[in-house]
Length: 367
Ligand SMILES: Cc1cc2nc3c(=O)[nH]c(=O)nc-3n(C[C@H](O)[C@H](O)[C@H](O)COP(=O)(O)OP(=O)(O)OC[C@H]3O[C@@H](n4cnc5c(N)ncnc54)[C@H](O)[C@@H]3O)c2cc1C
Image 1: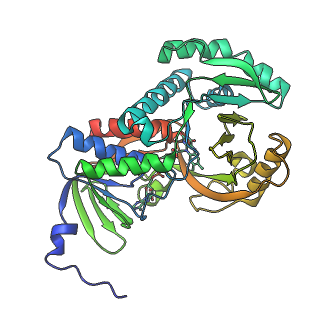
Image 2: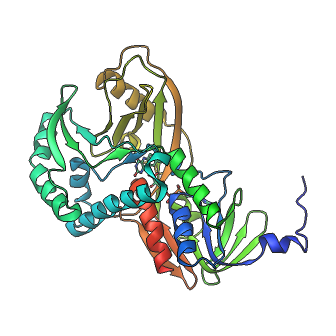
């Protein structure tokens, strides 16, 4: 169908000046919008999203409400300073609290189940368990909770339990957040892909030629940010997840991490297993913002389910999908002004369920 030229009347709908214009309706963009509107109820806050619903990471993640396993923290210390890592752990803990209190535990199926890190390599386990006291001291100092990490066993594997973690339903999380935005007067424009931005003028051009102007433009496009701005590089990273059909009984109850957080799995209810990760198996191929399934990673996770989780023969994959994360070099998200009228809030580095809402709120406070 040939695209109709915009009418005089349609200017009222589409070509108006906004106070705050946000590109990307993921958890970060919608949280920026919600808190911007709450801080300034008279402001016109508009969110532009390319999909009929958000299509990046927020609706495609695994739903772990986590602050990090010990081997993940140790790996992060190789990328970043102790000080920065401590800040991030605190931000994850506080971010989850903000998310839960803003949306309501019952609306997002929050499950206070804690999180296990399991080990198949005894040396790795010894190394991590020697760090338990150190990280428990950190936690007491950062979040005021004692004995957060506890050494134990799960299904015969040496393990470390973290009682402050949990799980949630990402679909319900985003549905509740969308409804809250609409209720509070944020304007959402679906199927509006942005093709070009002017960071100095705060204007954008959509793929059908529509133009938007704003006092403040916010890029909340996470992994896809480099298509619109190259000012602060965000590296994409694809993640793979699959869910099994209901099993007779799944003894793995709760949430689990393995190998620095590269593999994660949980019992979804109905005794279905969700498992994801394995990006490190084919790291270069997964440094992409194209959705798709990497067969080598799928095979690695299937073998993991058979050999480590020892699910009874005959289990089946019911659903599989990929999502795209955005990484910064240090793994700390970027919240920066990248032009006279433009902010970038991206690079949640695979921790966005915990960090996304709080980052959006900080962005709203800074605008
Ligand atoms: C497989 C997987 C598992 C994960 N598991 C967890 C987990 O268990 N716990 C956890 O804390 N984190 C997890 N994460 C990370 C978490 O989901 C992300 O960090 C978080 O959702 C990022 O939110 P965001 O809003 O910044 O980005 P996104 O959700 O990616 O939102 C960006 C939005 O921008 C839109 N967009 C992009 N370009 C344009 C354009 N040109 N015009 C208009 N719109 C555009 C996209 O369509 C998208 O909706 C996981 C991620 C993946 C992929």
